[in-house]
Image (cartoon, rainbow, N blue to C red):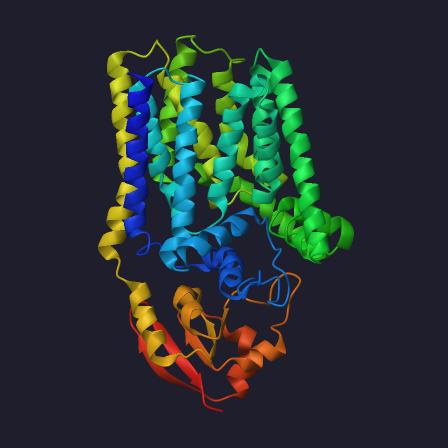
Amino acid sequence: MNKKIEFYIVISIGIFFFIWNLTTIDRFPSVWIDEVSYSDPAVNYVMHGKFISTSWSSQPSTEFWSSNAPLHEYLLTLWLKIFGVNIISVRAFDVFLFFLSSLVFWLVMFHYQISKKTFTRIIIFIMFWCGETISGIYRCGRPDVITILLALLTFWSYHFFDKKQWPFVVCIGFLSPIAGLQLPPFIIVSLFVVFLVTNNRIKIFRFGLLYTISVFLGLVSLFAFLFFKGALLRFLQMTFASSLTCTGEVAQKVLINDSRINAKLADKFIGLLNYFNFFITDKSYLILLALLSVLLLFFLYKKKIKFNSIGFFVYIYLIMLPGIMVFLGRYPVYYWWMGYLVSLLLLAFYLDNENISKKFRTICYIILLISIFLGLPFQMAKNYINSYDEQRNIEKLILKNITRQDVVFSEHIAYYSLKKIAKESYFTSYSGGRGFPVFPNEQLQSINYIIRGNLMNLSKIKDIWENKTWIAIDSIAKPKLILFKCIK
């Protein structure tokens, strides 16, 4: 097929998925803690001119927000200045970034000729959109999609690295740690795997060295910026020294030597015994990995792939990736895109093998269609049938009772409505966390409404809950929320 025609088909499919996601994204998933936490600094800057958060457990809203790599939040600020603050505009930002990522993903397949068959590239492109976990990632309001885009741009930029396009590589490397500290280790380890099996080791070494230097420069620049903002220490506490990561636990063990850290470290490494949970939780990913394993065994049996070939090495890397990332830091579900991306590219490579018969390849395509259906389409059907306009119900509750003079402590699900109406809103994840154990008393005493659901833990506001008088003045059934007012 002509390259231009294939490109138009890919663009059309990408636009279809972009619109499909956009028209349903306000119905599910429900607004949740990570979405609120990572969007809040940008929302506050657009609405109040302050890059702060009233959702993070690690920082008070009097500090410049620095609890994570900030590139997503900075770009989201620009996006929200154009499109306004609401649930659709916040989530649409990630869907748009994923649309761009999908186009770069196709370019990677096409320019490297990972698969020479047009139909294979198109069906793998559709799978990129439809994975169960990855579709959840780009719909849930987290900052992970920008790391997906930068990872793909890194792999793509290697294609024209010899054409004096090194400034592009420097730019990507510079932005990588600012987008997510988990991204550079994934890229560098991936480049090392390719280095082991490629014939052009000098090129991959030069590329990897340039990328690594650029990452270092990006990290130093981020440190300098946060230092002048007075926020560097908080950033280091929440990233390199975070108790959420193995590296952070080890750092705390060395610096603090707290006996409780031994138990935490043990729990993390015991968690590796559940290693295969990384592969079996996502149904579409499980089918994909099973198909990859069958194809690899077939090639080994036919002696069409050697143990020192790139096809075998990348498969071993794919299986080891969760353990590598846990060792270097962590590998939660929203980092699973790393393995999914590698598996899709490897599958495109396997399906291009000339030793696969037409009948066998057709069976593989049918299996891939099943995998596609079990991803985004199945999740769409299941969730949309059971969904309702929860945000409209919440907005009615808040418009009826809350004014611009009120200060509210709330579940995260009411975030968007409260931001538009209340004077100030604090959320259940605010305060009481790493490095910031106490809810600021001045803020605590100013609360005059509480929106309580099934998930709320009142321990953070125990002082005002027990020492002031609260009455339930209104409620909604879907989602189940009760509005309490302080009367004295």
